[in-house]
Image 1 (cartoon, rainbow, N blue to C red):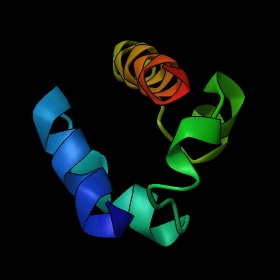
Image 2: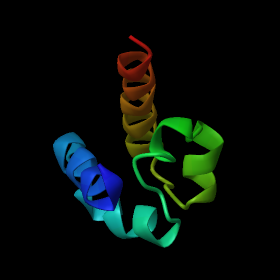
Image 3: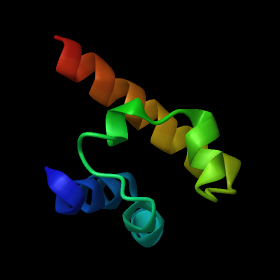
Length: 67
Protein backbone atom coordinates (compact mmCIF):
# COMPACT_ATOMS: atom_id res chain seq x y z
CA UNK A 1 0.00 0.00 0.00
CA UNK A 2 2.76 2.48 0.90
CA UNK A 3 1.97 6.15 1.31
CA UNK A 4 -0.36 6.25 -1.72
CA UNK A 5 -2.38 3.48 -0.06
CA UNK A 6 -2.67 5.52 3.13
CA UNK A 7 -3.95 8.44 1.06
CA UNK A 8 -6.50 6.16 -0.63
CA UNK A 9 -7.51 4.84 2.80
CA UNK A 10 -8.07 8.40 4.04
CA UNK A 11 -10.01 9.22 0.85
CA UNK A 12 -12.26 6.24 1.55
CA UNK A 13 -12.98 7.60 5.02
CA UNK A 14 -13.75 11.05 3.62
CA UNK A 15 -10.73 12.41 5.49
CA UNK A 16 -8.33 13.13 2.64
CA UNK A 17 -7.63 16.59 4.10
CA UNK A 18 -5.41 14.81 6.64
CA UNK A 19 -3.19 13.14 4.00
CA UNK A 20 -0.40 15.75 4.34
CA UNK A 21 -0.30 15.13 8.12
CA UNK A 22 0.21 11.41 7.57
CA UNK A 23 2.95 12.14 5.03
CA UNK A 24 4.74 14.59 7.34
CA UNK A 25 4.70 11.97 10.10
CA UNK A 26 5.92 9.27 7.67
CA UNK A 27 2.89 7.04 8.20
CA UNK A 28 2.81 4.29 5.58
CA UNK A 29 0.94 1.00 5.34
CA UNK A 30 3.35 -0.62 7.80
CA UNK A 31 2.91 2.05 10.48
CA UNK A 32 -0.81 2.73 9.97
CA UNK A 33 -2.15 -0.37 11.80
CA UNK A 34 0.06 0.43 14.81
CA UNK A 35 -1.33 3.93 15.40
CA UNK A 36 -3.16 4.62 18.65
CA UNK A 37 -5.63 7.34 19.56
CA UNK A 38 -2.77 9.08 21.36
CA UNK A 39 -0.61 8.91 18.21
CA UNK A 40 -3.38 10.50 16.16
CA UNK A 41 -3.71 13.26 18.74
CA UNK A 42 0.07 13.77 18.80
CA UNK A 43 0.01 14.07 15.00
CA UNK A 44 -2.36 17.02 15.36
CA UNK A 45 -5.65 15.35 14.45
CA UNK A 46 -7.60 17.69 16.71
CA UNK A 47 -11.17 16.90 15.73
CA UNK A 48 -12.44 14.13 17.99
CA UNK A 49 -14.87 12.85 15.34
CA UNK A 50 -12.16 12.50 12.71
CA UNK A 51 -9.79 10.90 15.20
CA UNK A 52 -12.41 8.34 16.31
CA UNK A 53 -13.35 7.56 12.70
CA UNK A 54 -9.70 6.96 11.84
CA UNK A 55 -9.12 4.83 14.92
CA UNK A 56 -12.18 2.65 14.23
CA UNK A 57 -10.89 2.08 10.69
CA UNK A 58 -7.39 1.30 12.04
CA UNK A 59 -8.89 -1.31 14.38
CA UNK A 60 -10.69 -2.83 11.38
CA UNK A 61 -7.35 -2.97 9.51
CA UNK A 62 -5.84 -4.82 12.46
CA UNK A 63 -8.65 -7.37 12.62
CA UNK A 64 -8.63 -7.85 8.84
CA UNK A 65 -4.89 -8.52 8.82
CA UNK A 66 -5.16 -10.92 11.76
CA UNK A 67 -7.66 -13.14 9.96
